[in-house]
Image 1 (tube, rainbow, N blue to C red):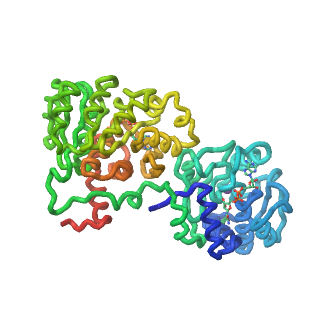
Image 2: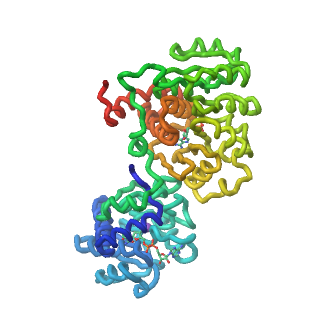
Length: 499
Ligand SMILES: NC(=O)C1=CN([C@@H]2O[C@H](COP(=O)(O)OP(=O)(O)OC[C@H]3O[C@@H](n4cnc5c(N)ncnc54)[C@H](O)[C@@H]3O)[C@@H](O)[C@H]2O)[C@@H](O)CC1
Ligand SMILES: Nc1ncnc2c1ncn2[C@@H]1O[C@H](COP(=O)(O)OP(=O)(O)O)[C@@H](O)[C@H]1O
Ligand SMILES: [K+]
């Protein structure tokens, strides 16, 4: 698992490494060396200004300054605050810097080729105001390339939000593990390229910290991924049901159904109003279609226990009918995915949605920000949570279900607080129907009995990879097809031998 550490967990990792016998100053020396290496690799960075803050982030900058000066670069150090106010390891790093120290407040950039931003890192405690904010804003306005130490100063490592001001970096050097703020927008965009430097903190410190947030990649869910078994048959791979709207809005369900089938469900049936039957039956040979007039008929169809997962929402139309369809799908034998109109049907009434979902074997909801805001309207403890990560976690706890909060930085969270953050979705994935395919991927994985949190995370990652595979210009129809080469790479990496 590729853990992401919030600043509190990172401080604990530092502390545990120090308890284990690695001096804090040694960690700082390695951190500063990694920053110096990154600066030295930039094209022609002969004149480097290093802006150092009052804490250990500034200490890293002072170490980098010394090393770069030793390597022959023309280095200027500019400090925010008084030199004799530095304490601990940062004070020790300052003693090892024998050159002049300017004031960050008055620094000018005419003769600077590269800036190292070592003002604030994990210790950012409040919004930047006054002098620190002005320093960051002038640095940002200088137009010079900036290498950020740990985080662009002013960026909150836990939330990915800018607290007052932050300067766009071309590169960010962080230590040991990335933080949620490196992946959550706007943080991800502000960091530029992120390098993770090994500063000698042993990975074993993570056993005690037990981080609950991870990068969404196969390391987060690969062990739960269900590979086709030699002795399997189509029913053992699960039967997914996708509820469709009428003939005019049937495309959404078709995209989802095709996604579920490509994701590996053994069978996929579209349940649709009779007027849409012809369009579904004629569209895609591998899909089955069954006419279902209302929720009661859907319930009767689902008396067949071989239906292992159901998706309700895409193209369905919001209202009591969609609520009843979702309720008909939620049973102890079956996992459900509630998307789109199924979520809007419960606008402002998340408790009612939670009650329905609680009857399902497993439940995943897949809102985009608009659906999320509608569903939790009036619930400030969810909508007012400090980050996208915190909102998704609060929503998952409220619903007792896995929440996929979509966007360029899709967060998947489960009620216990575990979460993944995606970083592989290309911007061209924002296209009509892409969300329907994603819901279908989730449903297809749930149908194969993959646990909901793993299934939802895997679906989001696969969706991003499929988009990359399809490339710019993609439309939603391309996504299910593009899953095949993604699976062709993924399966062997998970130990599948083709048997
Ligand atoms: N031993 C360790 O803990 C290590 C820490 N490292 C570095 O240390 C950093 C964390 O150091 P610190 O915990 O000292 O924190 P920072 O150096 O990030 O910031 C803390 C300082 O900034 C001040 N401050 C916070 N918010 C402010 C605001 N809005 N306006 C004005 N002043 C503000 C605080 O009063 C404090 O003086 C990491 O980001 C990393 O760069 C690395 O050297 C690796 C080892
Ligand atoms: N800027 C972006 N970069 C990458 N992926 C994005 C971006 N914006 C949206 N997405 C993804 O595109 C999909 C859009 O889904 P959704 O909003 O439900 O659209 P639709 O209802 O048209 O299918 C989601 O998976 C979302 O995560
Ligand atoms: K910084």
